[in-house]
Amino acid sequence: MASQVSICEAQTGMRCEHLHDFPLMALLAVLVAALMAATAGIATEYLFKEEYSTSVHLQNIQLYSWGILTNGIALLLQEGERLATGTLFIGFDRKVGLILMTMAAQGLCVAGVVKHMSNVTKDACHEVAVE
Image (tube, rainbow, N blue to C red; front, top):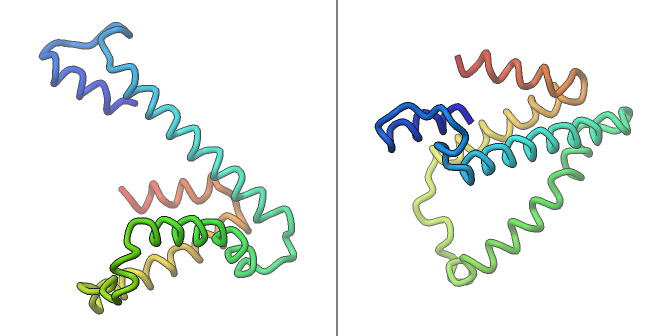
């Protein structure tokens, strides 16, 4: 939400000190996004720790099944023609494959941290890595 302060001041050319000075829909959107991200983190941690004896890989498969289903439907609706003609992956090269493997490995690391530690630890590691 702090980023909206600089946008407000840049657009108006003066200091935004009152609530009515800010773009309220932008502030609300940021707040909703933050709440959704926090809720998703809590839900994911709960699901990982609910059945602690279950393999983290099996739990990843269970958690990502809905994402695969919804993204598959979106792919069919938006890129059905390219999928049918076999041109969907034109432009993908080794770099893209390397990025995909790196992101998959990162996802496994994050899942391990969330399962065996906590969501707070995951966020702290992310902040250290970003800085």
